[in-house]
Amino acid sequence: MKRQEYAARGPQPEEQIPVTTTTTRQYRDTQVDVKLVLCALWIAMLFVFAYVDIFGFLRADVLNAALRGKVTAGLTVNQVFLTFTLIYILLPALMVALSLVLKPRVNRIVNIVVSLVYLITIIGLCIGETWVYYLLGSFIEVILLVAIARTAWKWPPPQIAPKLP
Image (cartoon, rainbow, N blue to C red; front, side, top):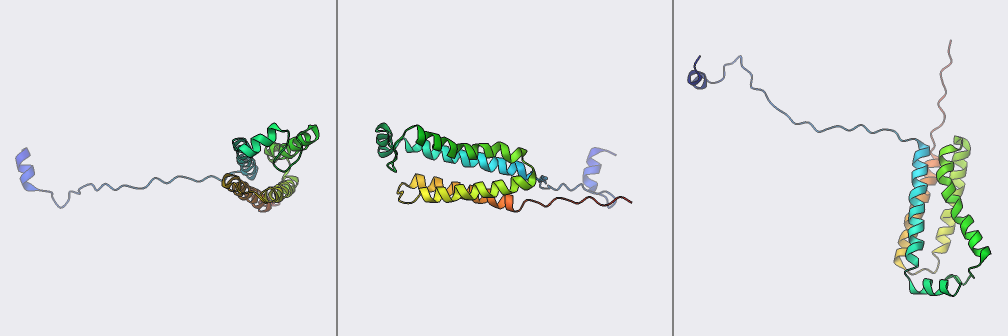
């Protein structure tokens, strides 16, 4: 059949014109282990925690107090103060690793307790603060700590293997 004859004839009933459709790509969501979620939340909390403190040194009142050997709360910066500050910061830093290696039962309890203790101390440190960056950073820290406590609280129960006959 010549090309012109085919074009003039048009589609025959037995012929089907292919129809193309676009489909949306489906991505599979994977379950993330609770230990990894807790670890990531502790890391995020530590980043916010550190940056709020680092940005504080851009404030004249904080910087001047530090140069005088004081902190804004009126405490003297000495070995005792720095040792307790280090201990205060070490615990959430250690929680990054501990969240990955502790057994589930202990992990759950430790994450709930430590996150709630830090939540209370961070709220307490906001009393009397007027700088928005500090309050916003502390608010984000509190949200992350609530997420840590909630994630640990809702830790999936162990699956019981079926009894073999």
